[in-house]
Length: 214
Ligand code: SF4
Image 1: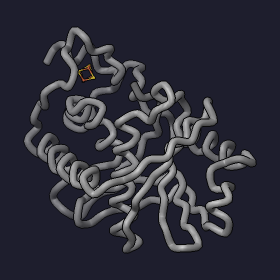
Image 2 (image 1 turned 60 degrees about the vertical axis):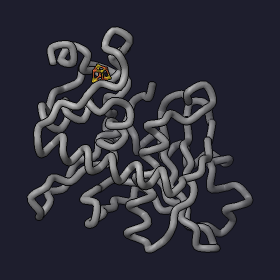
Image 3 (image 1 turned 90 degrees about the vertical axis):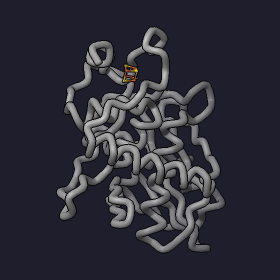
Image 4 (image 1 turned 180 degrees about the horizontal axis):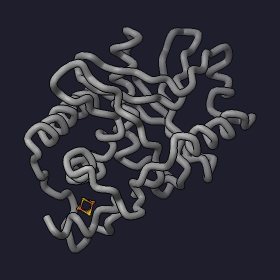
């Protein structure tokens, strides 16, 4: 499943409910129970594919990738586009926050989120949790820039593979529901069901031992 990720620090909210991060959304899509271990138990993962890499390391390989001459925004489609890097965004309506690696703003005014992964793709496809991470960024961008985001890119750096996909209204609705579920998990300290049978789960989240005790 998915690999090393950056950890996003949560700003302090001025409302009673905690902010949900885009990383929480990504974790929920990977396995809802991972959100419980992270946000309720504050359990430290033993090394797993969902373990977050340091922000410094993430920024370093993204910057390196951005210098590559066939980086995504050098494509002819994006001539004259603006590239915004490491953009922190908050949605007041959703109580959601995240830092977008790169936002391409085309000359026609289209906004496209790009996420960088220091890992291989799922045999040439984007992982589901990575796709929904981008959908969550799309919601943040729509609220902050007053736009409609229709597509996103995931760049699997070791493979130099840039995967493009459509961001549909139903994907956005799903992420809104996920944000609601995450808030409930945190507020009610609710242990959510697992997505994969425990005997089949590889424990890529790094919480296998804790999971078997719950
Ligand atoms: S060990 Fe498996 S079932 Fe348990 S939280 Fe992690 S991914 Fe989910």
